[in-house]
Image 1 (cartoon, rainbow over the protein chains, first blue to last red):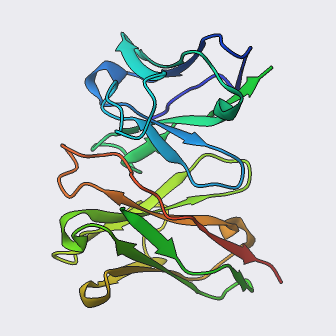
Image 2: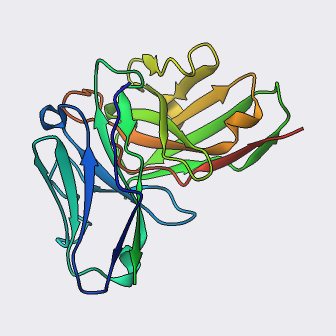
Amino acid sequence: SYVLTQPPSVSVAPGQTAKITCGGNNIGSKSVHWYQQKPGQAPVLVVFDDSDRPSAIPERFSGSKSGNTATLTLSRVEAGDEADYYCQVWDRSSDPSYVFGTGTKVTVL
Amino acid sequence: QVQLVQSGAEMKKPGASVNVSCKASGYAFNTYNINWLRQAPGQRPEWMGWINPNSGDTKFSQTFQGRITVTRDTSANTAYMELTRLTSDDTAVYYCARGGIVELAVNWFDPWGHGTLVIVSS
């Protein structure tokens, strides 16, 4: 099955910028989506199709992709951004066809 | 607003089955797939399968093939997931989530239900 790799943890001071990477073979050909999950809560979609944002998500959340790596950038980080973040792709030739990354814990210092 | 409301927590013994329901509101139920995912403690989410509420068509991960059944009641805007032959490895929070009917176009999950904790223990 398809594999998506994320760093286990990222630490960032309030007001600074955090970047979370997601690597996968030929990820450039796939649409990458990102979810935020706070403890005890369901995941929430924060970026879809590499760089689009649902209407309720602040502009501080942005997505990009280059080569074999997708990146979620959290600008002007706030304490409320502390959460687990997962990338996800759909790969029709894989089973399961919906694949999640290993997850990154963002800690706000 | 779009909302998915799931049934309550369950405790099951090994070998038993569990049924989880997911009631949708705030949108046309027939126009989006309902996906089922689960998340074991400390793990990433894992996709289990989906149902097209309009046609009743289903698709499942091979991991769950033969153990999972997903149905829907369009009159109640509700989808149901049954998982059989439970083991302790099935202990997890089970989520339903709205996804696209045309996977090539919409292959993300939004929103998710609040989750249903299923504990399998003797």
